[in-house]
Length: 368
Image 1 (spheres, rainbow, N blue to C red):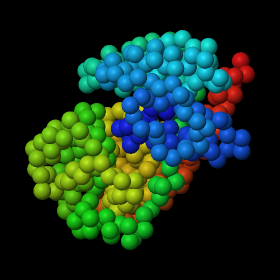
Image 2: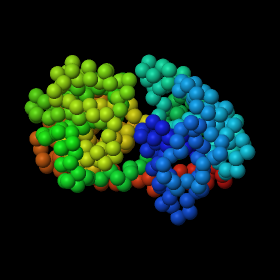
Image 3: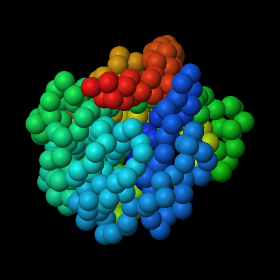
Image 4: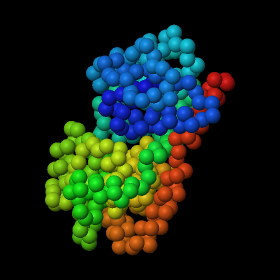
């Protein structure tokens, strides 16, 4: 398995969460697969065993980020040469140009191809991996939406694509009152707040989020808290909030610990998700698992991931989203109903289930 998502910056992003969750799910199986990892050179090995048997002695060289996906087709092939593994699982592209091993590839999204003007450099870097995808012995899509994108942008055999939804870490459950109070004291937040999380690149639509919160504030004195490392988008985010008049009513707090993230989800009046496109869209599920209603737009994978438990409004309609949030703030009955339905819905997304389906995919590939 490509273990590089467990190293460096990727380890705290969605791709790292996916691999940790999958490995944890394997560990719950009665006869788990024996997993070894291909790791990146010049980066520390991932902390914890993750149920991994061992790391490969060969390491993948690290080059310029825009060239890495192109070079990986050769680097991974070289690292797998002579391997005694039964198959190779590429977690995010990372597919070898040629190998004697059967290859399984997980596709999380094809957003650079769906939205090429927003991600021109990423799109160019991902073209070689996209062109190789039809050679994979099996493709795992994390949602039906992603499966449709694979069929739209590649010549992959539909029979080789399996949809396996992601799971939610058991850590995402309602935090204790003590944990919530400690978080409030730490952040110096006394009143009600709306919560958003992620790196607000153009796809996450910070201006739209600011518009929604500004509309809500006409009726409710709420603060917006945004968690997540904004990196090169920090100025873009703060400027959008300032232009919307939210400078004194919004906090951008950067990357937070897992415990603080759970407490933030729990303490929020609502989780607000303005993303234009998601391959899976895990944050709304995490919020619901913590007992907090999620408000999302109707696009991409969000209808299948959020189900009827989340408040879903027409894509891009700031007035409709603000109205849905206001109803949650005004109506304790609806809020409790959303909380109950969200907890039930989120509980169906487990890493054990994802691991079972992934192991079945391995078995089917090896049986051919």
